[in-house]
Each structure stands twice: as structure tokens, then as C-alpha cells.
Length: 127
Image (cartoon, rainbow, N blue to C red; front, side, top):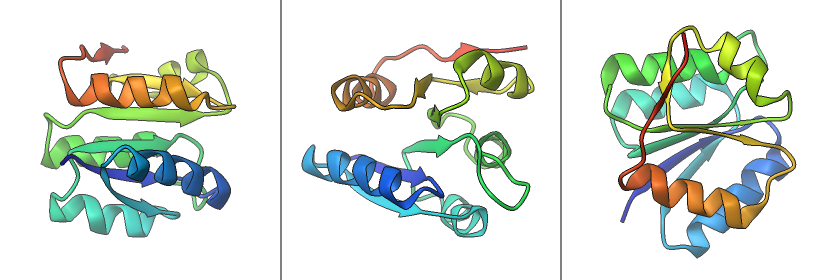
């Protein structure tokens, strides 16, 4: 069973994603702030990181993804954003990630993306 860390400061979105993932049989930890996320990332617990790009407290999902890659460079990352894919790709600072899911989220597409990220998906590299 894959272990997934969901990071979203919007509680309703985090709860929606968590419920969908748990219903599919994944072990999920959902956190709402960067400090909690770093603590979970540092344990090495997650097989997949799903992070909202825009978080509070001047730390964003890209910062957390860079932190994860410094510890576990092979872990796939899916970003969730309401700001658009192209803005995220410009802000990613060369980070390799699997996918971007734009809000509002289609849960069927989201779950297909998760399955792909945990399988044979190819990462996207943005310069």
C-alpha cells in the first residue's frame, strides 16, 4: 500500500483529496501547513507527495518539493494549483515533478494521475 502525503492549507480540498485516496486504499497523511509537512517529509514516510502550490507563511509547495528531493530524489511529486500550470512551471526552478492538477479537481483524473505517478509515469522537467 502506497503512502501519500497531501499538503493543502485549504481544509476542504485536503479533506476531499484524502477521502478519495483513502477510498482507493492508500495510506494518507494530510497536513495543512509547511512546518507539519517538513516534519513528515523528514521521516521518509511518503511514497508520493501531493502539494498545493500556494501555501501560507511564505513557503510554497515548490519549496517543500525541493526539500523532499534533497532527502529522497526518487519520490514523485504532484502539484495542485488554482493558479494555472504555466505559472507553476515558471516558478518550479528546475524541479522535476510528475504532474500538475489544476483546480477545480476532477477526482477521476486526479486518481488516474496518482496511479500513474506511483507506477511508470515520466517526470516533467521544467527549466
